Picture (cartoon, helix red, strand yellow):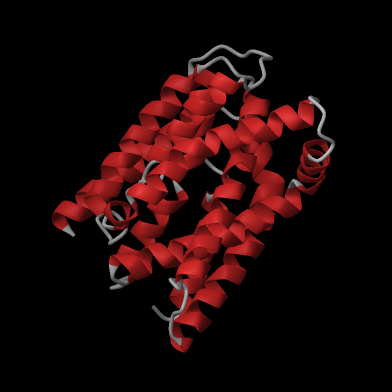
Length: 264
């Protein structure tokens, strides 16, 4: 992968991370179109690096929320911030289990399988369409909701299943307010990404060559900058716009991906 391709993929990651259209799926499609021939392990590593960049941009945008959560967590009182932090931890459990016990099987899906990504985008479209029909409420995320949403997040580790789309749709279908669902969705993934990076650092999985380091560094910066810009103006779009628009988009892109995989 050259530096220009990495920058393009970084911009794709930054722009699609905060919309329910599957950033990982778009990355796999982008790699296929750009002719990336990375082996599955390298492909997944680059995906993790870009997700790390957008996690940082999420922390910057939600710095006030994160500060309040950390403050509440270390106050050791049963306040709203403490409960929210524990719900985040509960939501992480399914994805942590998948990452620990099925990492090798998961890596096999990150090798440019365009048809698979296309079918997963169709599933994302269905989830968004169903969530769009749900009634608006003012309910918060409960501990039971957090675990179910966490299962959705674990399933969304597959490329083509939108993480934000799956978690927001699941939240809304459970009766959670869309604004609260979006906030929970964006914050719940941050600890997982940093945990994944820490695991890879301790395991030596990020010891790539100097050439790859330059490309991945460029992709990281592109994803971070694009993520900052996207999160500031797109998060309101995620919260307020009709999810059916994104469902239609995922349906169209999914069908194109399947056709590309079959005939391209």
